[in-house]
Length: 263
Image 1 (spheres, rainbow, N blue to C red):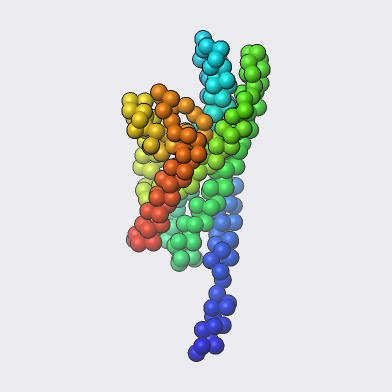
Image 2: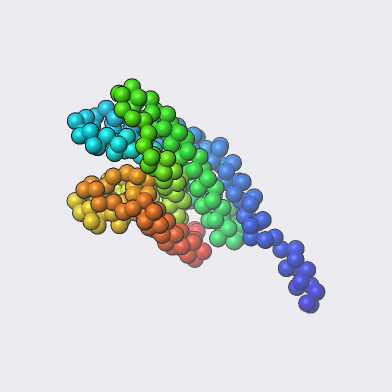
């Protein structure tokens, strides 16, 4: 009996090895899905548009604020976050919308592995979209700033670009977790857009001392975006707080996915 148990344990695939094929399958889905391609194209264009708004519409600033204006233009690389958030939601809720979730869990009964694979694969997809958005913003902002005779870089811009890339990618992970909690695709997208694009920002504008502790406020701080009233957290604190929000949401999604009836 002991020998049999030992042999079974030895032949059982390690969790990482078992999850690897699932991650590759999710990445193939990402490449083959038209929505992924569409959002991956729209996100960089949206960021470039916001960079142009920062550079061309906010005139009349005092010379002492020029550096902040340059940094704000590059920080628009984070404006693609809503598209990576939607990518993550679609990745999870699409299984329920198209009734494939039952087959997915039949093929891989360990639901935690399915969720882990989706979090990793779509986090990587979000990172690719975020990197493209950052590169597009950097190139466009540099060209537009130079055309206006303004500085194209400050000492803080590299950290702003890194923070924008990582937080935009993290929104994809947040989207997967939100999609696991709210399985209805339309409801999940509506909740995400209303809260993260409008309600959170409105609350931050009205009550900046509270807004900086909210998920959007934390992500903005990590990505170098200025909050209303200039009350944002330091970048490192915003990054840690945003990571904590995502970890809590992922933990809730994992608990729900393991216990919820899929029918």
